[in-house]
Image (cartoon, rainbow, N blue to C red; front, side):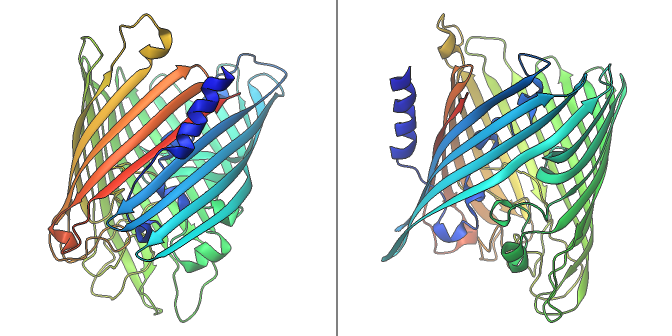
Length: 455
């Protein structure tokens, strides 16, 4: 068994992997999907304990490797994530959970004739919270550093310090939380929108409420979230970004074997024009939807469809910043603090873009008598991307030409859960730029691979 585990770890660090160009990578977290890097992202694991009393402890080991290759440029990254956790039950339906994380990071990059190699280590208090519920579990309350989520996760989905209360009934679910990001270690703070956020750590307060109506296999929900920026401001170059989000969504099973979700988000608030004290009103929106059809046949095939879009500005140079270049009208660029998965290689922000994807998934050995082979799945997707406003860019200034055609992509994902506590995955993406990239027609290859090992 030890040799088996060691083999997979070595594979993780030695396999060749590719992605978007180095200058497109603004932070280490941007080249990984959290759903792969951390299997208990939504803390689902916390409720699946073998015992409901006493003290429990354990660890997660997650070696991950990823690279970027486009033309003559590349970026290769290897990360060893180690997480140690302890869970102590206090009284009935209540517990204290603490998790520490350490990320050892090695980065190799080359841009034309220049190359570099760097290493760093990030140690942080990942989670630390108390959770309690009444005897029937209809009311839950938690406080501390934990994961928070609203809607489908586009608006907000991540760690912060705060409190959350949830009420569950047979028909209605109600969720309310307030969370602050300013106490997170700045190297591990994912909510930065400008240089001040990067230097001092993003100091943002999130307050949200969500109401869900459940009817048989259908759920209709609505939510609202306000985000307040408390970062220090330069009077000559203000970057303050205060926003409010209003969402309406539906999800469930439409007919037998067909599951779906759909969510519309409207954003309001105020932002500033770059290098000025001039405010602009935010008036942006986004839409995210998807459907899966499950076939009752060998290998359990699934047909996948996704459509999403986010509004943009004709005068914005990028969508990872809180500021616009000039003031011509309202700020219509959709800016958010959550998660959107729209392709491995392009990794599009849900701003100034239409995302159309379709694909399939198979459990290749579902009929096997070997239990470990039953949990072997392969997913493939094709994506096509269009700008909403052709004069603007996408992501961090990508696709600068005045053309709607961003490009197309093919994604492949292999996931293998070998044991209850051991899984392996590899994701590959191939992005082919469209006319919006002009003469830069370098094909982007992306691959990331990793192991999730639970002790």
